[in-house]
Image (tube, rainbow, N blue to C red; front, side):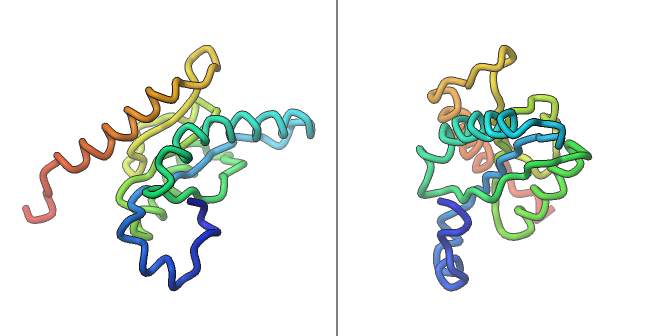
Length: 144
């Protein structure tokens, strides 16, 4: 679901069921022409559909981060905020493979293949499900 589909009351009731926040990252620089910006947004939408549609009942998609001048640092800051807001998992969906980094608050990156092609829907689905399984199987270290 999209962030805009929740009222404050509705979110309080449903938050337990929506444990995964999705942050789309466009990666625009500001130097794109209007048609280049539109093409980037269209490709991001197509990539986002691979994770957003199949898992609509468990994920909340936030507004896209269009400009990330500091790259991974900006993404980590926003992802950390999503976790602080109650999401157990954060998925970054980006057409810009160069942003992909091992960030503490990011559980999964959905990015294009090295040749720029979109990943297979099945591969994305399996990656999301593996993320959820692995998280459940990790021991709770907060009691240590």
